[in-house]
Amino acid sequence: MFKSKKAFIKLVIVISIIALITLYYLSQKIILQDKDITIGGTYFLPHQWSGTITITKDTLFLPWTTLYIEPGTTILFEKIPDENINKNTNENKVTKEIPWSNSADDFIKNHNDPTGKENYATTHFDLTAKIIAHGTTQQPILFTSAQKQPEYADWDELVLYKDSILENIELSYAHNGINLQNDIEGGNIIIRQSHIHHSLWSCIDIFSAGNLIEHNEIDHCWHQAIGIKTQSNNFIKNNNIHDAQLSLNCEFNAKPMFEKNTFISAPLNPDCGPVAENTQKDQKTKSIGGTYNGEVIYPANENS
Image (cartoon, rainbow, N blue to C red; front, side, top):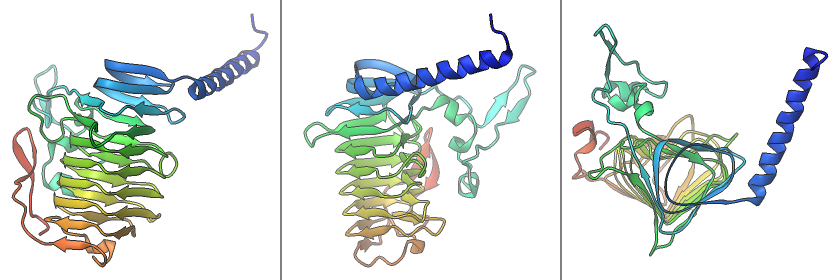
């Protein structure tokens, strides 16, 4: 049919380009409606969620598309129970230690945190997308565990692409809360008037520039409430941060602009700069710290 291999390759390239252009065009014209459904996998077109959305595996909306979430929507994350996340027994009944994941630093290893093992991510799920989520005070948007008795790290994290907006949302019982992607795919993200709480690691991690975090309540975060991991400008203001291992943790010479925040039982990492126009109240939290499967992994007050 084809005179040469080159001709076939050229045809494949042309078809691929046409398919990509078509997908991009459709992504600007069509918004698919989802209400009260179970979902998971990879999505190429914009969707709008309402009602109760249950996530049963990692869910990715490709960067050229957008996920819109209606006020009052609840997003529930299922998980696969891990009987022994630290060990694995092969067909010969030989038990091997599960290796640490690439994200497991010394802090995680020193606390023998089982969620830092490679197989945690295979049983606990994330949502990655450019998200536009405008809740209201009467109808907030919820991201939380599907379990009847939720606990820390029931689901993995919410990963946000560039120009996402979260307003009047509540996010709880995640492994690593909200991840603001790097500058290639992230940046210019707004999180405001929301409640982010009960994350085993960070409640918010920032890897990109130009983000605004304001007027939120952020608490019970047992690596840090907000981790800033880039030198680029980020703006953190008017937040109530409490009961956390650290309020702000600045790494890699990060110097965010932060003002008018209140830090209670959540010390500021001195690397971020002086408290200055913020209020800090140093007192011990009443929380025991971050737990997993009922065991304390990160005891509270380690940095007080």
